[in-house]
Image (tube, rainbow, N blue to C red):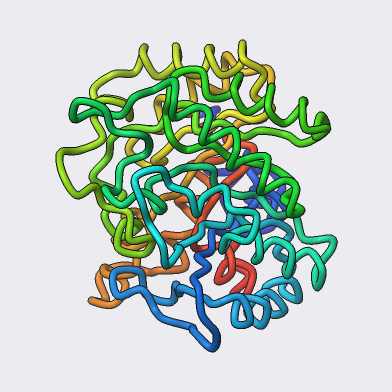
Length: 321
């Protein structure tokens, strides 16, 4: 035999020398949940080592995160008050707005991305205004735009609309520009599937719909071409970053998105993916650190520039990458 690929696998030095894929820790985004109250650090039962924090407690947690090297977070708010117009979402004194002001005051260099959606703030748990039993797209856009502007006015560095309404990037871009926030980027949840992998998140954010499901606005898990169409629409509307969510079951879509996108591509390593790793590790069935590393490499190899993951803190703590 003349060709022996194993020559380049003989030891760790040569394997590292010829490695094709590396994950930049600076590209990790850590999702976090903030709630009303004080002194609250409540573990999420279905997401071990993930917590709901009150503002005072999230500041303590972020001190550790920043010291480890976390550069960016994605912030989700859980309000005390919910109604059919999601008024807490765009309240200038809402939970996310107050949290952002507190975080930026203490950690000005931390890059804060805010989730723009209404499900956590709606009394019925859907992502928009309900009309005739379904989410009414265009009136919902107005509330999403108000939410984005209020979050950026509070100090958010980037907004990330996760609602999957048609035309949401245009609506947010126009509203932000009109408010003077022309330099604020938008990360679109461009190909967001109606996935069973979101179960633990809905526990964490108290955002499960009270009737029906989200399949009339989130994407059918069977459709790949439609996902690319959604990505193309977000690009046309001016998204600064496009995203595929979830990650592991949609690596094909992630790869295809990276091939057509002229802007950075994000992937969301979602709650169900995180919780499955934690559950299997607890049972002793997997090498947890190796699995986390392998998953991150898979996202990067498929084309992700940015990885949103609940593993971010432990990756840096344990030097997994």
